[in-house]
Length: 605
Image 1 (cartoon, rainbow, N blue to C red):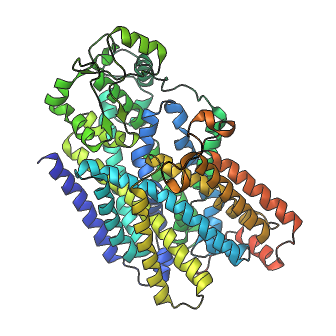
Image 2 (cartoon, rainbow, N blue to C red; image 1 turned 30 degrees about the horizontal axis):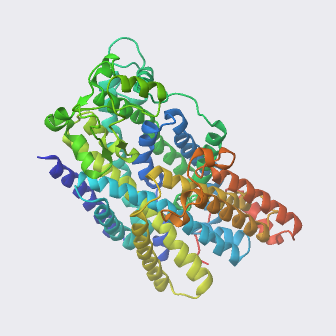
Image 3 (tube, rainbow, N blue to C red; image 1 turned 180 degrees about the vertical axis):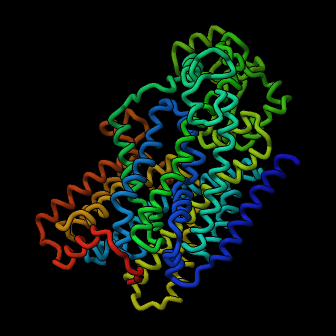
């Protein structure tokens, strides 16, 4: 069976499973559409949360940016530390208390806690901005995956992915999404782990990638550590050492913090804890989710490091014996004739990989021609610059099994896993957008007396509209998947997280303070991102070049969420101290939230 047919079989089977689950778990009420009837078992909810959490950015892009970043793998480990640490914050500080409150959505909590329809409406706006930004990254992941494995254009891949999400999310709601995400978690974790086991065994002799990362490099023999070998290869090619320290530790700390508190403010993850029966179940499902997430996140650093080493030794075969420039580079003849190298031309056809024989010697020289010393050495050898002119971060995990010459069924499994990761998170985000519009905006502000039947219809129409908008934005994303997701985290860090923290742990913060804080956090963070990324991701509208030399105090747009959060907290406390304290019943409500005993049935208000 050829590779294309294998891909179709694996992806087709998983799609059939998702749609079948959606039909079986079709939501028949608003309680099932928004919160799965609050009857999901903690272990299953933990698994669904893991799938919801591990998006295309985690599956496709995270290891890719760790592998290929010019700053080195260590600096990009902020993605791992921030996302994982943020989930711990969410599990300990927010999930049980929000479940104790017993409502369906984050804006509903903010509206009731700050006794203000205006606060609820502002939270809806923040949620929509965050979720729409985040879902762009998922659509990008879907397009990249389909473009390679189903041999269609990226745009066509987006349309196919949007259609699948429509089938199981619009009809199934949270109930259908939850059980679909359980299946998607199984698919994505198996697809991510199995290739890593094969590659780790081949490169280090260790079957566990976590041990392989700190083990010895097997192909060259001797006692050189795998990371030491990788550092030697990439530095000889003129790149920064893979394990080198960050050039801007201040920005790295801010970026890690932005990802961390942004994680704890993500609406589509928070609403997962409204689906369990009790507060104790929310705590339990958070613990299980962390276990399921760790299965992928502890493997990702090894995947990134081994992908970079495999790519480098593919284009410089002599690097296996410690000889890069002193041995011939990969030849065009080999690329076009050897079956194990056919992946190069296949990925070139997608536009995510590009090479050019600049000096006409029939070889492809891959090195950092921006490094003066290496460029001078290369010029002496007759090179005319780096000839591997494009390696998209988002292709590395998907291409890794092919680079390592693994069997076709493994390649097909990775395709199914990548699609599962993107679709699972996209569904959760679209549900968050839908519930914000139908439950918080329409029922909460526009038409409080709407019937349950009409509210459910409004929720499905809202989700349909959200899918159309997300697909349109996914056609022209502002960066690769992890970058786009990081922008969403910055917005969540600057808006939702401070409001939730102050709503739970401070009886003094009032509606004026909360509204002022969220406004300042949203406007400041959005404007800063606009300065470097452009207006709503429209190309050519940025004010400043998106380079480190132009950042204020060296703070990148990906890191600015931490500053926005600090401003949110500061403004909220300042305004609250200058205005009347919240009513006594609200202060009593805050006190009751922090006592994690009991949790009544969620009610729509």
